[in-house]
Amino acid sequence: MFARWKPAAINTRPLEWSRAAIGMALGTLFSVWFCAQVYDLPVALHLLGPLGASAVLLFAVSSGALAQPWSILGGYLCAGIMALLVAHVLGRSLGSACLAAGLALVLMCWLRCLHPPAGGLALTLVLADPASIALDWLELGPVMLAAASLLASALLYNNLTRVRYPKGASEAPVLLPAMAANDSLAITAEDLKQALAEMEEFFDITPEDLEQLVHASEAHARRRSIGQVLSSRTG
Image 1 (tube, rainbow, N blue to C red):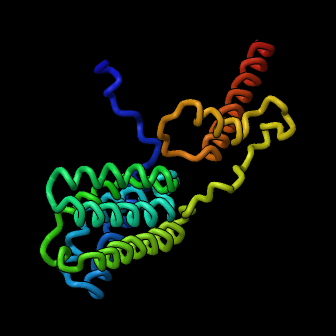
Image 2 (cartoon, rainbow, N blue to C red; image 1 turned 45 degrees about the vertical axis):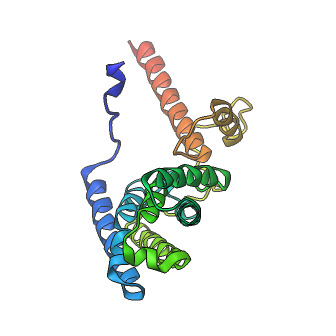
């Protein structure tokens, strides 16, 4: 069991780590600063934790399904509505905060906008500071403004640094020449969607990304097979 705790290898270079780190720092700074210009600084700083967590997704794993625009906007909206609703009905306590986070998760799954930092946002909004509590339902304003500001930062920074964002679910993957497009046995995005549905688990990757990965793996396997055949003949 403990062998499964071993962390998987990170298939990115230090240069990409630095790119993501700079983007995360700048994006979080801009979103909090901009929110503070419209609302009070304490209100903006109260959102710093969830925004920092969201920035990790938007800048470090921007191709993931949990980091797409609808995920952060929809996730923050779900968390904000559920948190304020629970706070009004049950009051502001640790138990109600945890309940709000759970309800936000269900709503995010239903609306297909699962965004993990939104769970932290729900907890934060229920157990809010006095300045945020005073806003009542108007607290949705700074929440969505901060989310939109962070998203705008990710859109600008990622594309300027040659990282395509957002990753549309409908985009067709680029097939390698080694993959026969008319192969009836080739795995497609639709096959992967059905397989993911049968597994009934969360995977932070789109079927299109999986399809491209499978095709690339098949191409490498075919090249390796051809190389082995040629080496056996020459030997």
